[in-house]
Length: 425
Ligand code: GLU
Image (cartoon, rainbow, N blue to C red; front, top):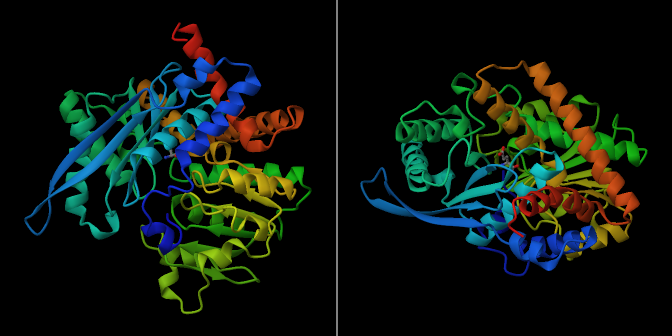
């Protein structure tokens, strides 16, 4: 799950500082809700941030020291929750912003959690299975004091998967001296994973696309969809859109993009993608990620990494609806431009909340030791996402704000209220 090779190799994007822009919207949302400044002072940064060094013996015999982070934004509502990202561009600021977004997601879909997030600066595409296992276990040992099934519950994110969750769960269970499936979500089914977790983010995005299309009178049957990124969210989403009768005319990975105005053969591409979502290398006639984003289409879904739609290309976006499956793909300037142009933007903190919703179902199943069927999960997820979409959409209509600000207003309220009831502010 990654975007342009250029973007992929960049260090933290100082110009589009995701932490600063998140803080700007949090501030606006709290102001609109009538909260005093000290609430913002509490919520503008994580309450806890741990930086760790993880030594790993590499296959060539050398020892490499990796840097990792775990941010816990606010635990007034309940334990913190959020994924762990393995990526060369991971930074302290990014992890902090991502933890705030997790608070917002949990607030929007009304889960009993605050937001957390972790990350390790590494490139898993260049590491062996053994090295990845050592890194995953080392990270858990390093953060074990601040995480746990009732403290902070990790999950997969960019370039991490159910195998990595399994190693992490095993390591934590050894430290804890108990089998602790509720320590982490996104596990394989045999280790207490949940049906529907792997496809949950894409299913949530699909529900948001369907609801947004209804609002704009767009028929999904035959609608032209462009998806940036072919990782967990992007690949399953392309499949669901294709199966719903939409025409997926463009997809991309970290190395380029594919375009066919008649619709791509999604099943073939899914079959050929590698575990990091790379598929375009197999083709000669590719276009760039930049060209992909500016294709004439009905629905555009950025499902890769941050800062892909900026003030530089927002004027050229030709979709009627933009649904953010990635975290932070659109800058604030670009949000304003798209809104002014009448494009409906469904923000990340709502559109990508399906993943954490089914993670919550997984954790509940682990805690009670009783497991649900895929149909039960689907039904519950559908209900939660439809209700959350309506709630954010109605807030945006009644308060006359764009959907991003509306989502922040809905999302931040619970942590603000819980912090107040606890007597923290
Ligand atoms: N990493 C995912 C996200 O950004 C899922 C988090 C979770 O399941 O806890 O929403």
